[in-house]
Length: 262
Image 1 (cartoon, rainbow, N blue to C red):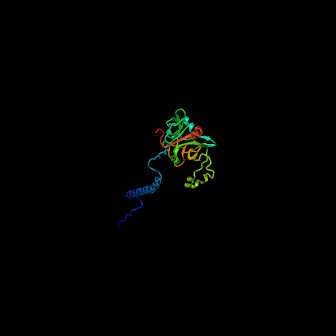
Image 2: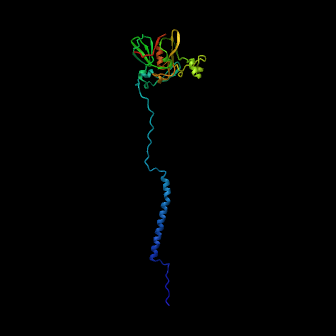
Image 3: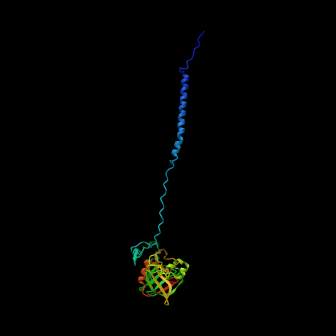
């Protein structure tokens, strides 16, 4: 009887070697694929913090618009409307370059028809003239308050005062009871830069009686040339000081509701 031959599986054959190599390669590919897939969430999480778009620079903040220059600056105007101390009160400078040049103090031809020494208020044009003796007049820009529109005619600058106290009339106090503390009985508002009458006040009388019409200063330079809610005829503090020093004692004043020259 012929003996059966036994196949020894422990010895590698060419087919087993090829199969083993194939399996090893497949496992390697699977390992690489698993590594790549496992790395994707990390890569995505990192890339989410990094912008792929180019950085866009924010535009610079726009500068606030500058007020237009209406009047060229000059040494003479700087002196006229610069900061000053008067009577112990500090008066701030006026930015006159932001104003209509027609409203600034200037010497002009006298078209009022009035004699020298007369003060003329041109209500609709918002000008005040002090007539001089050489055919000229010193002209000032003014703001006209409610009372300024209500009176016209001729009078006399009977009284004048530096840094006056403000005493609101009774009808004003009735409209605004908070002003009672400044009433005549309470002595009025103390002089100062915040006082509505400003640095000077000139009081107009007619036939010996107070008309309640005033020429006075104001720190509100932007109100010059306009109709304002209260007061009579207001000038910039620098201008009312200049006017006060020029006006003759008991000067005649003419308040017109028609423009000068018409």
